[in-house]
Length: 393
Image (cartoon, rainbow, N blue to C red; front, top):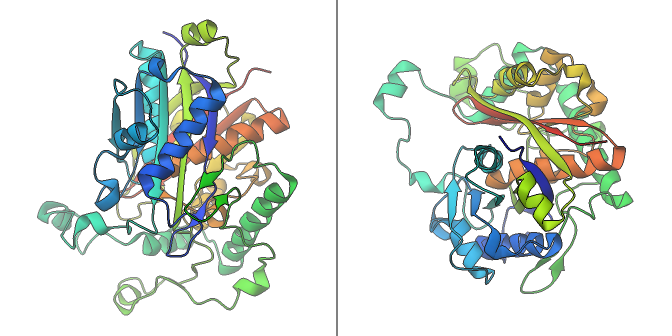
């Protein structure tokens, strides 16, 4: 079985997912097309040799409804014979695209494949694909009566269960912006970001980072997810999470080139990393956001790794309570957790996040000469994807 090798990984800058955001004037097909084109050009791959394009995208409606990966490939002027599929596993969609792509290489179905993700949250509103309908159905509603929860309420329950207070949440949010700002200022993001051409300008840097964010500035913000209904249902909650300790609505895209050893030798590519293992699992649907803990424990077991051996962790900052609970439960070194900031500062373009995490982790591991990295993404419905990435040193 051939190992799956990471040849290159790139991402767009992150734009605020609202009208007037830096990428809001770019159709999501065009956004992904520019990122995929940059990956093809930078790697030197003959696009005719690509076996498939697997793309994560969550809100597959409106401009993202027509198999956005296929349209992006065609928009980039790339060979028509290369197919594409769009994948939806909630916030882990991009990571699932990576895992399916790598598994295809390992199984011998692919020699060269691109995994990618895109989400334009300024143009295609989150949840708009539901069209106001009940997406659970009566049996799920009955099984989890009095009802499944919004993610923000679940994040509050996670904070309460792990004893995480408002100060810790605000400190983590400020840390995310501080680390991302330091990486941006030092040029650490330059190798992973490809410029995006919009109708009015070229965007080269993340728009989402807020320099100078500190606990004092966050202390005045009101809780974002308290309602009378949920306050009555959960009287034990202190309601501590704010917009600042939650991930940002974001526009963005990312893409990863994955190849077999045979293809890498033929092309003369030096692999930048290889996949050591993958895992996806479900956990408590009402609590929803705890599955990264279970997924991490299982992937460590499957790869024969210990948490203290991992040099770099990327745990998606859907809400500050998620990586904090993960860290407390696993006993991981906090200095190794999201060392260049996470979704609180860099944003969470749903379908693109998994590829973005891998892209940032890969470049950071190279800069620090680290060997092992682990990433995990929590997903609606109480699921998570996890993978371990390994560099030769």
